[in-house]
Image (cartoon, rainbow, N blue to C red; front, side, top):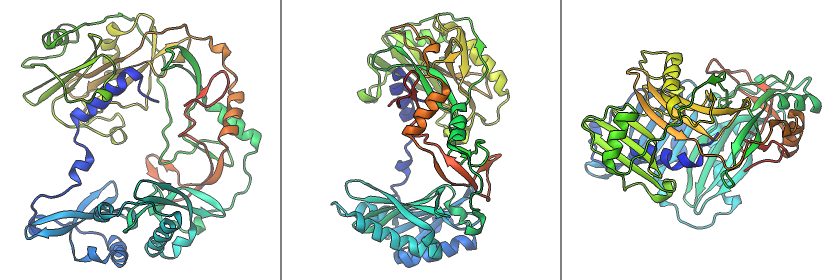
Amino acid sequence: MKYPNKLVGSVLAASLLATTPMWADQVVSAVHAEGQIAEATLPPAGEKTLSILYTLQPELKGMTRKVEKSRNGVYNVSFYQKIETDKKRLYASVELDEHTGALHSYDNDQEMSDGKKGTLTEDFAKQKSAAFLQVLLGKDFKKYKASKTSKDNNWDAVTYTRYENEMPVFLDRYVVGVNAKGVTYVNAGDTAPLRASSTVFHKPEKILSKEEITKEVASHMELSYRIDPVSGKPMLVYSLESTGYLDAGTGKEVQGVDSNKTTYSDPIAVTPGGKRVTAKNPEEVAKALADHFHVDGQGAAFTVNTGTPADMKSANETIYESKSGGRRITVYVHDNIIAGFQIRNKVELASEAQHNNQPKNAKISYREAQEKAVQYLQPYLDQSVKVLKVDRNQVRMANSTAYSFVFLPVHDGVPVTNQTYLVNVDGQTREIVNFMDGFDKLHAPFPDKKLAISKKAVAEAFLKQYPVQLGYLFPMKDNKLLAKPVLVYSLEMIFSSSLDGQTGKPLK
């Protein structure tokens, strides 16, 4: 699911204002004394993998290394090259599995920057990447096949996918980046570090028929409305709401590491207030926040943000911000109407994956926070909105201490997926720390949902465009990766996010 057009610029701008990019910490030119780089103890299995890597990149062995404490079952090893007597720079980094010692990733920053520009042949990229992986994986390398190559200006990336019983093992792969200097990076798929034995992959017995597959896919097709971004008119859309994997024998959904199935709350009846609050300057913004949005703006002094690029803001948008006493308030104004605000007491964000709507040290429950969010939101709802649903999978503008609620209007029992309201509630203080109004006025009535083709028809259209693929998957259960693979049908979930509800044709 995507942000509505009106909010795209605002959300991107908020991310820039509130975070420091990851790459900013990767360029290391600060002074480090050798004794200041604390080294943790790397497990023997990890040391074994490093010793293999040293045969491929012998220069790493003589460098200062820093081993970071295991996080989420992964050790990070950074190698620093001495450039002056008291200065070092990051040369390469490696992520190793805590249990198996297997490689999660390898990044050679130096070879990436030193690589000569120019077109590389696919044969050269495959040759270099294969030679590297063959040493790294040993006899296991024969289980992998080069499946595709992607190109950039001065490097190629070759993907190696594991095969068992002549079928792919989904998410067990390695992507190897190559430039004129050699291998610049290796990224392992989510399940590659398991280094599972071939004996755990059983040959298929009874599998679903074509008709049974169609029936199962149809059961996961969900109808929704979407506002066309060009015409502004509502349209009927089918989305495949699935984990992306079906058990090849039973048709039941299987959870993978990369699964992200959208789920909605029960319908929530609301009383819309239709309130719109205007503000034309910093003083009016401060007054409006206090009088209408109940935001404590004591000590806040707003100024117009001029640092956000125009292409990251929507048309006729002005961003105001205040930084005072460790508290930052950002306000988004469209056509002189306040469309939302964000409050940060300190620069502390949580990634959507880690957050999972489980804020740190919360003193109220998810249900209590949702009730507060609905109560807060109702005065600002468009008069046409009578029912809402919460998209349970959406976490936006995440704060480590806040619950995040993305509300979708419902028309005739069908959710409108790109007309959203965002309300984030601090789980410790009960404060509303985010409000974003993404509702756009309609330029045409909703088409009757009876005009939509059947789920079976859209499933048939989907499978014709995106055939299923039979292969193996290491499933997830209770947020844990199981060591026994399951034979599954993989469904296309990236390019098939939505289909026209009346024709079944894929939508861009």
